[in-house]
Length: 300
Ligand code: UTP
Image 1: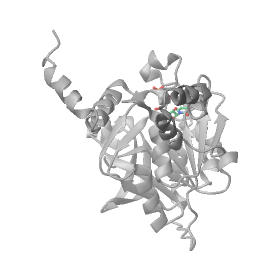
Image 2: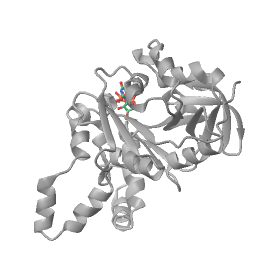
Image 3: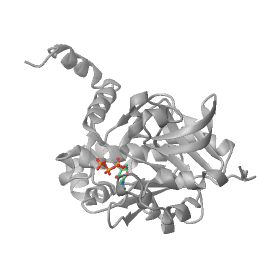
């Protein structure tokens, strides 16, 4: 396997947020609102993703949107009416807090995926904005609760051995391999020397129980691989297939992230995330515990 070690590792400056999917598993909520605007407690999923990227040192936030996704652009924009209203009420601090947590002017770039042809296609749509440098990808619908933000953990590992690909993984249940991209390879501590990548294999064919949890660092060579990809599972251009295509020439590390992940693209995952995040909030956890304790074991 050819390994490219750079003497002066490039910083990961750009993150792509593919948000062009239709979110069909979350209908009817996603009929007229983007899945990425679903809230966990009081923040949209996409805001958690941007927070995570910023914590990892990302400076440019690239959103690949699609039809019906303008709420995401509005969310990261100024809101003069709200600002004035809060100022009139003497609540500027709320506005200032919110503003500080959003990217600054000029840091956000939007492009559009004309048709939802898959995650791989969405990333390919960002090729001219990313250019010729390694970049991060975050899937906002997978929320990760970990001590250190997951993308930061991935970047930290990447910088110790830069070049190639780095993929965040978590241990998943054997029966769940059909819902994830799965990595194969030799694991040493919390890293895996990846030698196989499979999209949603049956448990019998899965090379491990390390599932890809929506955080990647990819080299620009991924774009040519995506360009030549045929449609894969469910008629979509799959990112995992393009990564598998460049795997033989690309040093690839899986980084096992400790903690919990929530697939907020499905209803149970989203409900679990709401409970876990509310229980972790000092202002909410007492009330949430009280309400849970009051629930009858079985609905009448
Ligand atoms: P998912 O497969 O979870 O999203 O893609 P989906 O297709 O919207 O969901 P369902 O299966 O219909 O419920 C993971 C991420 O990739 C983005 C999604 O927005 C999500 O953030 N995506 C997916 C795109 O940007 N474009 C696509 O064509 C497909």
